[in-house]
Image (cartoon, one colour):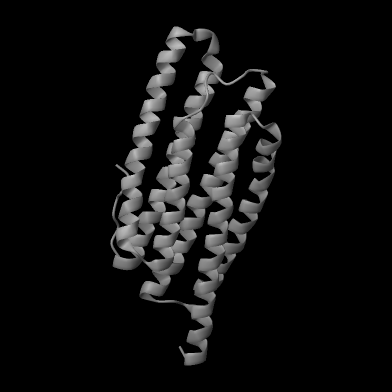
Length: 223
């Protein structure tokens, strides 16, 4: 590969990273808006999240095309190939996170349509969402910086999200046993907690890709 070709290839890799970061930022915002729409029962905000999923899908397709083009035209070797492969897997996780944000927004819509107030003010679910958003940001920072230590920190944060999910599940289950008339909304909120737990799992998947990118070794960070 000539110097000029190599420089063009490096520029393409940098552009790929920036596009992935932009997609990550859109997904982070979708998660935040979705949980806010639930906490406030704001159907307009929920609709913004649902409609915004098309943007995430478009970004996914664009970046997928970039990855395939780089592989087909540049025939990268070793770490460069891992970098592109990692980018491709990262956008799959980001796209699925976006889908879960939509799931949360649609849950808010269903509760509003039923004409119900929230069972109680949300506390742990917004905490889960904040942690999950931080995990997304940190995992992408680790990807750009090729920082293995930061990738492992993401996995540690996933343990906190899991604990909160278990806490939400137990509290809501206890509440529903005592107040069965609210079982539908209780199930909705348990599912929201599960969606956030899965978002955190996808962020951990990204951290795993970072470790593979840097070391060439596969590490299972999700227990």
